[in-house]
Image (cartoon, rainbow, N blue to C red; front, side, top):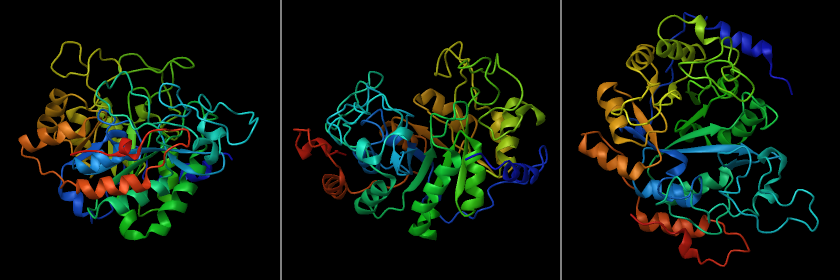
Length: 399
C-alpha cells in the first residue's frame, strides 16, 4: 500500500516548516518520569544476548527506567521483538523447518517480512555471543518473543511502572526490506489500544522512518513518539548504499524524514534537527551521540565528532522536547552529554554500569525489580526451542 501523501502533506503543514508548534503536548503522568531516563538498549546487549526476555529480565533487575526494544513485523502480521531486517547467522541458529520440505528453510538469512511467526519461532536466537560484546551472557535455545509475549513477561516480573521505548523497524531507503509504516502502526495499535490508557501512557513509539511517527500520531494521538536520527539519515544518500555524514552528504529530502528537507530549517545542523522533530510533533528527540564522521566514540579523544550538540539540545528543550541520545557506551561521552549538555536520558548497551555511574553523579535512578520474582517469571515465560538440550537455568539472571 502506498503511503498516504495527503496525510503526510497535512501533517507537515501543521505546524509549518520553520514555525513548529512546541512538542511535548502530552502531560507527563508517568510515575517513572521523575527518574533520569536510563534505557537498556535492546534490553542491554552488553550484558545479555539482545532483544530476548533474559536481556529484559537483566535490565529490570538492574533498575532501568525504560526498556528499549525493537520490533519487526512478520509476513502474517505479528510484531516480534527483534532489531534486524533479516536473521543474521551471527545471532540466530536454525533448528528445524515448520513443515517437511519448507522451501524457505533454512530461515536464517531470510527477511522477517517474508517469514511467518511459526517459522520465526523455530530459531534459536540466544546461543551466540556477539564478538563486539565479549562479556555478553547467552541464553541457549531462547526463542524470540512477540510483543504481546514481552508485555506478558514484564507484567509478571514487576509491579514497577517501567517505561517502554519501542522502535518500529522500517527501512526508509530500501522499503521492500521491511513491512510498511502503515502496517507497523496498524499492528502496534492492535497491541497497544486493548492495553488501556494507563499502559499506553508508559509507551513511546520511536522510529528512524518518520512516516511511521506521523501515522502513529493520527492513529494513537495519546501515544508519545521519539524521532530517531543520525547524520546518516538526515540527507539523501551520496549513492545507493552510501549514506553521508556531517562532513560529506547529499542534499534534498531524506527518505527517512517523511519528505522533510532538513536544510529548509534555520540554524546549525543541531537546531535544524530539533526544529524538524518539532514539525512532526515528536515528544522526544533521540539522536546518535557521535557523528558517523568520527573515528572514536570517546568524547575526550582526538578525532571525535559529536552529532548531539549543545545547540541541538538547547533548541529541543526550548520547543518542549526531551533529548535522549543513543547508543552511549562510553562514560566519558555520558559525562559530556549529561553534565555539559543536560540531556534527559541515555540509551546504552551497558545499563548496569551506567546506573552505578548515574548514582555517583547524583542522578535520581529508578528502583530495581525483585530478582527472585523476575527470574521465576523468566523461567515461566522464556520459550526454548525443542532442539535445545539446555536446562531452564540458562534463562536465569542475577543481580
